[in-house]
Amino acid sequence: MKVAVIGANGQLGSDVVRAYQANGDEVQPLTHADMELSNVDAVSARLKELAPNVIVNTAAMHHVENCEKEPEKAFAVNGIGARNRASVSRDLGAVLVHVSTDYVFDGDKNAPYEESDAPRPLNVYGNTKLAGEYFVRGTTDKHFVVRTSAIYGKNPCRAKGGLNFVELMLKLARERGEVKVVDSEFVSPTPTSQIADQIVVLTASDHYGLYHATAEGQCSWHAFAKEIFQLTDTKVKLNIAGPNEFPAKVPRPKYSVLENKALKSAGLNRFKPWNEGLKDYLGV
Ligand SMILES: NC(=O)c1ccc[n+]([C@@H]2O[C@H](COP(=O)([O-])OP(=O)(O)OC[C@H]3O[C@@H](n4cnc5c(N)ncnc54)[C@H](OP(=O)(O)O)[C@@H]3O)[C@@H](O)[C@H]2O)c1
Image (cartoon, rainbow, N blue to C red; front, side):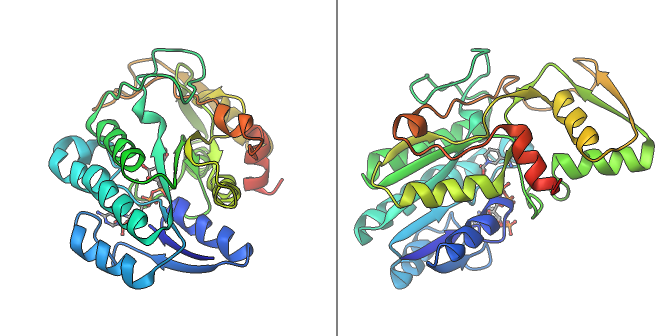
């Protein structure tokens, strides 16, 4: 298979490139320098020239504060851009994998979100990502819309400019010996290597549709930090941060746990429990 990976040097994209290469596929890695997603004509021309069988879009404008400041740009990249990639995929007869987010939900459910739950994004980022999902789903039948959450990988997240949560906790512990983390926000921390492997499994099938794709189980950020320190035998004083100690500039869901219901129904779920994924990442 010829697989074009958009966002190939990103946190998730770099693992997607590795996973398809390990699967023996021919990978066409595409970075921001190769294509600006809001430039519809340039993206169409490049993808048509490459003529892949599968297009995996991991790229997005996903810095939440920047999306709030520049909603038109966020919509151009995450919404209209997704529509463009979907129509090119349809014209090529290619399969499109479109990576989306838990931020399409408001977090008020306080129980794991299933694919059938009604989205209600709280911010511009979530709204533009949801628009992208709808454009993909309405434009091409051969799609996998893959929502994931709280991701971390060997390559740092480019939009967040530095360290993932695991590395940040270890750095703060080393430098300060004391760390404060909230215990009132819940996630399923998911290694990008597992998402990448899951995407390869999905595109080997024709079970097209909308999928939640996160590690199994859930924890608070505080419990995640505790596990990181335990597994690495890091000596640190771990405190609980008060609910208003790190006020978010933009509203975000406080409960971001997704249930991989569609993957399980199709017999395709490959995710491990979140603490097993953390062990793999840390190599312990
Ligand atoms: N990070 C999370 O916790 C999280 C959670 C849920 C879902 N997601 C979703 O997961 C996906 C991957 O996230 P990630 O952590 O791998 O992000 P990342 O490391 O920031 O990578 C994003 C990639 O997109 C590229 N990009 C950004 N704007 C672009 C544009 N206008 N045109 C072309 N390329 C552009 C970036 O290139 P440059 O850096 O060179 O601009 C980078 O290669 C995104 O779709 C995001 O919405 C992320």
